[in-house]
Image (cartoon, rainbow, N blue to C red; front, top):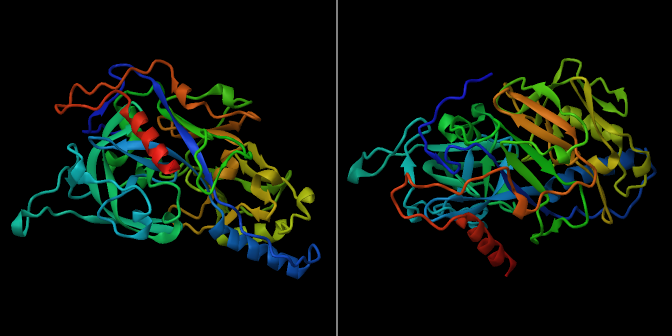
Length: 445
């Protein structure tokens, strides 16, 4: 187990009590691409070619994302973020970013925050005054994702989830690639991966809460509702469709005891995988061993391109859904457990056609190659990320379970925010909630 290093940043929110806090997740879902009118005989070369063509197009045109709200700075600036177990840093667009991916979203203005400090580098505390005119020297950083990249500088400020605040280092983006950020329903990223994926220890949000003794348990859990007709389509605002619960587990949201696997390579929440299977029949794709990471920031299932191509062609999902009822269950064999997905879990079936929820993604060594267990699996299984014991737990999510309403987002006794240690005047209690409602109202207009 990796030692949790003490942080110099201040954390406020729970006083001397330990508790848990929930972040409701909203869902945005983009419509899948239209199916081509021409229909080929099932199993024919033309049908398989059409399947792969539609599969490839669906990777660019179909995306579902879950996001929550955080606030940064004094006064608080509310931003939408994807709570991402596959990223290690908090990244938000800066007002100094002129890229379309930034200007189409809410941006963070460090100059408007009385508690913001520029950071010179990932390992430094504050930017030093140097150079002509006493200008601050600051390193820039580029973070590469599977489908894009962000360049930015380091900042330090108050970061709040509802009533829970911590002073933390993060990245303010000065440039973002159009793909995938321009059309994303979120403004930024709240990284929940292990410290090996962060710029430095002072950038890790979960560790800052644990080392300060603020959480009842040194873990967090994730629940995503199964697909329903009430999801947000092309940008509406609806009730929460999921939850990230820091410090506890909701046992009423899953049906069986949790199964646990140790993290095999710290960084991602990554475990060893024995193989993939159709039903109960292993496919023999992992003769040299495979690795899989639970990733709340990926809308699909993903894996090495060579193996994903084999899966796509072997499944042969007809774009007109004509063979949907004969498709096999798709299994991920982890330890002694098989995480089984039915065709309705890994295929998005709509009046437009059937889109396979698989994506080719080649993560280079030493982190990869990896299979990425994203939203399709996380809607089927409740997952728990145990930071102190360095393990991942999973169990089948309860059928027809709903995300807790916003009014019930707190579990146990959660004291009001305590900011007595800060000298400047503070906003009213739970102002993040009020500002979030203002944000939602503006977006509805």
